Amino acid sequence: MVLESFITTKNAERRPFELFIIGLFYASVAILLSIWIFKQYSSLVMVFLTVIAAVPLMYNTMKREEKIDIDSDSEENRLEHHAKVMVFLLFLFIGITVGYSLWYIFLPSDTTDVAFNTQVETIKSINSRVLSGSMIDKANILENIFLNNIKVLLFCIFFAFFFGAGAIFILTWNASVIAAAIGNVVRTNLAIYAREFGLKVIWAYFSVFSVGFLRYMTHGIFEILAYFIGGLAGSIISVAMINHDFATDRFKRVLLDSLFLFVIAIFILGVAALVEVFLTPALF
Image 1 (cartoon, helix red, strand yellow):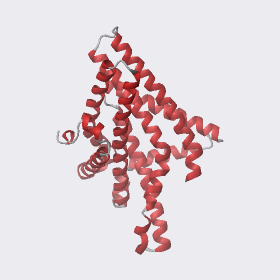
Image 2 (spheres, one colour):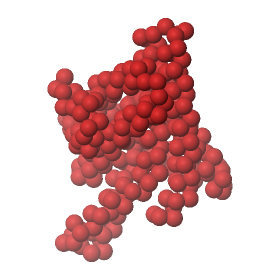
Image 3 (cartoon, helix red, strand yellow):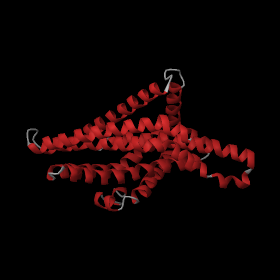
Image 4 (cartoon, one colour):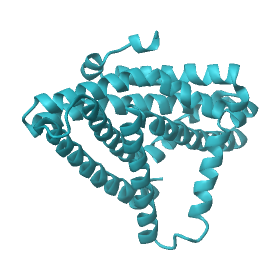
């Protein structure tokens, strides 16, 4: 495949910033192809095409991480290497999110309504649950957000365990939903600026993209990091089960490392929930 030859796992660790450009490129190719060929179903097809492009990198990364888990006797060394992987995967996710967001903003409204139809419906569903009165105070909001994030984390682990690099599907779907939310914020604010100040100065207000992006990524970056860590844990176990006897000490080491990653992911989700409930509303 042409896209998988763009970058290897080793190169991604050395040059993580390049994953942002690659993520943006993957998202752009996916959304253009989906609108061109499968316009009616493009909101889902673009996610699948992005996943297909990212799977080779994800699969090779998980295989390499499992090998490092087995060969390394130091938990500190394993975590250090896992951290490098998380960095370039985060850049990949941010690139995909920005790519989807930009297309949401610049595509004609009628095309956007089709291309992000499922994502917009998901956002409406989430908002309706928040505004339904089921979450009365910040404690209840915090509990609901945390439990929902745990559910997504478990989905990432299960997808990664049963489908190898399958966690990338959950993460790419989340990227498309976040992008739709960001794009909606940007379009709404640009419409206000255009009405109040006129089209001559509208380009001066493209800073609203940064505001919209930060509004969701202030807490979202913690959530996505946790999901990647959970996906990594599930994938490592999946690869280890294929390659090794369950009774070996090496396999037990992989299980312990994966369990430790899962605990870290839960802790990060707790931080993400606190940021979303208390910090994000204060800033935006």
